[in-house]
Length: 354
Image (cartoon, rainbow, N blue to C red; front, side, top):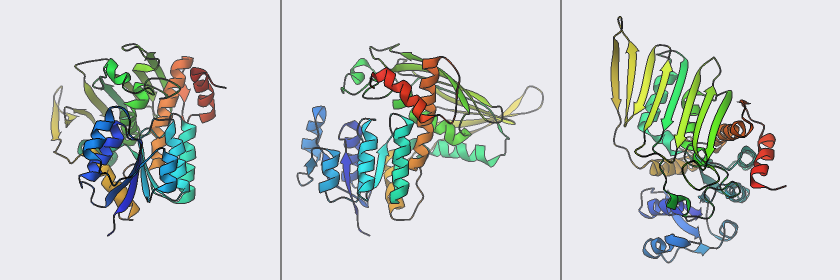
């Protein structure tokens, strides 16, 4: 079976990581045949790792129009995802986009419509869906063995980022160029997991602290209250300013409490009197999650597998995040599904455009 010729648009940290995986042969039917220009501290990597025969294009548009590719991986800053994805889709290419799909829901919705119109494979890099533990957790919840959701709490304090991280690229940590902070950049994975495991909340109330731990204009600390259909509720807390950090997910069902922490799942069931019984599911050693997602992207193009993270599902966590920002700005509860136009009007005030 022939290899799928692939280009990478955006050769920063993630773009170089994808290139390394493909060049190593980790994804057998994916062939790297083009990249966009490489700048900053990635030039040294390119000199050592990137074969001279791979052409380097000045922009995503140039790569899409001139390179011999059948698929593109997009790893540019958030606001650019829409532009490059739609260009690729309209050119008949398959597209894998880094998370989040965009900075706001309207961008994601336009990308999804274009993918459906063209019939191309359109995936989003939400690699935590490939994790054995989260897949097992979803299996337990969806089995119905322990009843319905009562509560979900997730404290994610292991996203620590230094000041140098925010200074590593000019687009980071600003409303006009990144579109958000810890919720949009790091928390996208966790919030995708919440909706993937528990369903979408129907309303949120958020408290986002902008520049609490770093000299930045976007939030680096957030606490969110969520309400779900059927009466369940939840709390989500995320920060890039704490170390040592903690990452603890608790899901309460009618007949069990499930705790996911330190690479294992603990299912606690009520017993006689005050006692309870517990069973532990240990995580297992896995292949690189990015590798699994790239392999799945290839298999979907070949018609052999369904996508683990279809692009159309990438809008869910983005909508949650946009609603959380809107709630924090207005200091009020926000209903879901979110009106994308309403959010974009408020976002424009933050980035000071007409």
